[in-house]
Image (cartoon, rainbow, N blue to C red; front, side, top):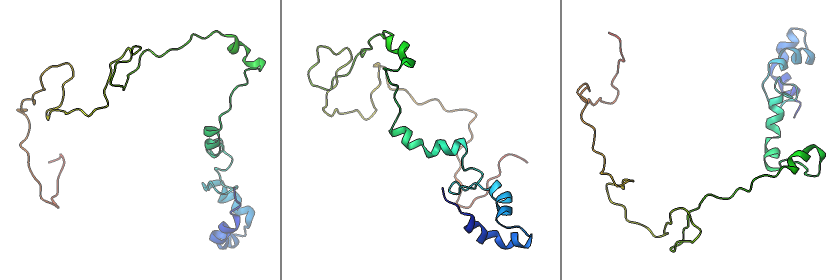
Length: 151
């Protein structure tokens, strides 16, 4: 982080000198209320949030892993975990894979009817009946004033 005291003194130094305050006055009054994350004297510098955000990229791309030889993690290392196997997968080959438990799909393009495909084989849904309480549609011209509610 940078020390931006000189820049702030250029901005408000005249007012502070008129009040008989210098750099210490700036830090007591302005820095205590400043939210500039680039300045080391600002209110937000050194907060837990600022430290977390400043290290976020490093923690994401360089995660810490537990050392399995450490005695701290011995109970986890000794635990016999069940082996997790995939329940099924989709084969994208033209032939059905003998181990596939799910459906098989082809890579070829399939023509889709204009009305779409209804899963389950039922008919295409019909449009709902007209609402008897609905107001008739109205078109407004550009620049029209609309009053919502009221009298």
